[in-house]
Image 1: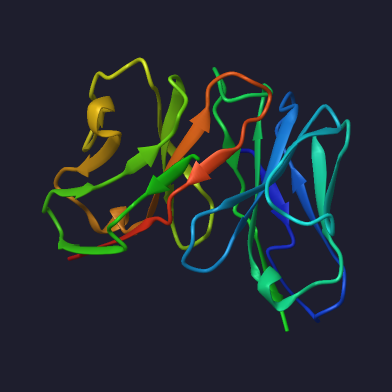
Image 2: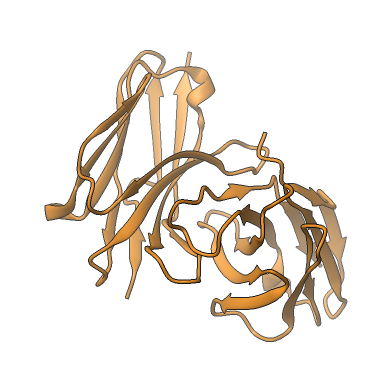
Length: 115
Length: 116
């Protein structure tokens, strides 16, 4: 039990639509990161938020955006969905900013299918 | 560039066999972290171990053991006396030491099937 909860578990969207995925972390986990995991691949870093501000981003276009809230919840928003956005989206949280001294806990993910 | 390579895509063993999952990494950093995660079909990544680059001692936890060799940039994972419940996809990951960004770089994973 990691204490990281994601919703929805599964969803299907149509190309061009927008989607919001949600994550709830443990109290005190000030850092949240989002990863995209395509089928048969390892997770790829999308971005990280620390105390409600984005402080790191991977190689993803601006249509991938996020929010982090004071109550340790966060959102991943994807606009103008493309077929290649079909993937498992994982939320990860930890207490500190970097990796030093922190264990990173992952949720079970949200499976997004774009048709 | 930083990179993690897990050359074994799939491994199939019979219960009670020992199995080693290979992980080779590339980084220009002198200090870094290495991780192993287990991903069952449910999708959640289960943390197994974190090792920092200046600690090359091998580690054993029950049936699990890890062999870190900085000279060959490898961080291999061995399961002794495998069990059906060990069936999952296993990921090796590399992380930056210090700094503000806590992102991990994952390999493509090794799917382990343990048959009764």
